Amino acid sequence: MSAKGCSSVGIIGGGIQGVCIGLQLLKKNIPTTIFDRNHPNEPGTMASYGNAGHFSPYAVLQLNRPDVLYDVPKMILSSFGPLALKWNYIPKMLPWIFHYLKNCNKKSMLNTAKYMHQILDLSMNAYEEIFQEIDTTNLVDQKGIIYIWTNQNIKSRELEIKVRNDLGVKQKILSTKEILDLEPNLKPVFSGGCYYDYAYHARDPHGILKKIFELFIKKGGKFIKEDVQSLKQLDENQTLIKTATQEYKFEKSVIACGAFSKKLTDQLGEKIPLDTERGYHVHFKGMDKLISRPVIFLDRGFGMTPMNQGLRAVGTVELGGLKNPISKKRIQYVVNCAKELLPQLKEHEDEWLGFRPTLPDFLPVIGPSKNNKNIVYAFGHQHLGWTLGAITGKIVSGILANEKTNLDLSAYSSSRFG
Image (cartoon, rainbow, N blue to C red):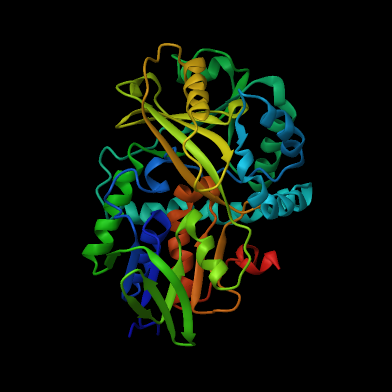
């Protein structure tokens, strides 16, 4: 038994959340096993592989904003818009939509911003600790991240700048000329922007995940490549993880399988309105030198990141669940947006679809299950799963080891959904 009194932990999910939680538990001498139907070394299998690669400690504002709600009908009806719906999925999304409308107001917006800031503010220090233990050569760059916009939604931009200023987030407002001084290849179809000069980005998110996973194994962690069918708490000292072929007992268990977590929380009798934002990416091979750092075009809900695989163009929010096929219209949207900013781009490759686990108030669920104190949740990080991996690892390992924290974790509790 470890010094902290927890004898063993099973983690369901081998993405960035699960692997970071596992690593932190081993540092506390708590034996840990990660379960996933895909191996973290296999490319293309999880959200940690296909994201934009941004470490975004400034991204406190989310989509539960009155100004965004006002624009939703316009965005859905436009074929050249950042938001799309799979109409066959709407009946299943009704509980999520109901909660979203309830949370789409100024008070909820500021509550989300406050509690996102609390963990985002710690996110890079938590990664820095991990980066000291792995070789990040050619995997991480610190050249800042640029957001650009047109004057079309300038009131929304002013709101974002004010909320971030009020929370003490560092940001530099730039003119079109100042942006072009940094990124001369961009076509000036924008009116201004914001520069987070301290931000990092991944040159290969999957490469970083692999390194952290290898460190987890090196420190004595175990990995079982199986699909978890069910999870339950047997008594106050035992949880049972059941795969298709076997049963495994641990003192405590963690659900950290992103968009796939709802199946397990439903089994535990918690009706958490978790749903899925589907995000897309493509690569333009050999084009990563066209920009020096990530550029996000807010009007389009789209961004580009220079990566080892080429220039990665990512974006759109498509509400459509886990089972609908990849949408060629969404891929074309991402390609069109990229070529609007960089007309010199040629053919694209690697069409990819991933799933962002999103809750209607855009805060993650971090903490014990309502009815099963030995089962801890760590999912629902929406667009910020990559940024929040390392700090979630520290928070959740602390919860499992019964350590005291000076953070207010009440806002991330699953009990907020009643």
